[in-house]
Length: 261
Image (cartoon, rainbow, N blue to C red):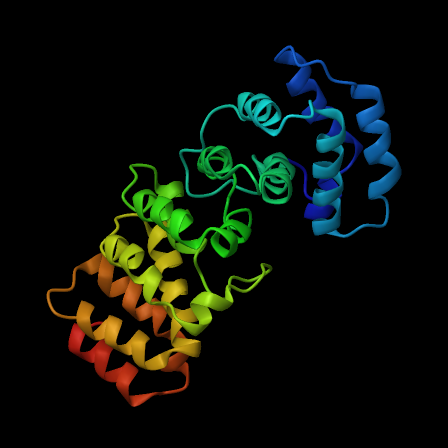
């Protein structure tokens, strides 16, 4: 993948790539009109708008029934990403599919959850999941709790990254800014995860909690300190990075107690 701004990859060539993948899977798809529509609309748009433009075109040119369209889109995803990198290099082209689910899958919860599960194994479902957490908090959290015990590191990472109260470049989850208690069982499942990719997400989620609910965040960490593992030590220290930069005494005490100062 040659170097250029990420947004510039979402263009006519990406439209052709998606169309060719669909046609290779015997989908009745008007490639010429699809590519023409995207080529005419993406010029001058920024990244998020380009992704949405392509998702909107998929809605126009794929079959009207959401379940059918999602089934066809899942067929083009290809092999899973077995690395902790590559989401935006090898699998950038999946982002409009994730946006399609986020924007048009709202009334099809179970189908959309299955799609996000597959998408995140290649790219990420951290943005697509958030409207579902707002609309169906109980059902979506139940699914994400199960994902936190999944054998795939990308799925486990999504279970914490997707519930971050203040995920960058995403809409805030006000319900977890006000009360993050419902997401704590997910973090408990991940506190000793072997994947650094997952560990970083858990730490970032705790860092978010500390910004708005410092007492609860401190209680969570204090509960993790006894019998802490090496993996958990890394999560705690990374979660405390902002407090350590501010030289907060409590944060210093935590890392000293763990022997990771």
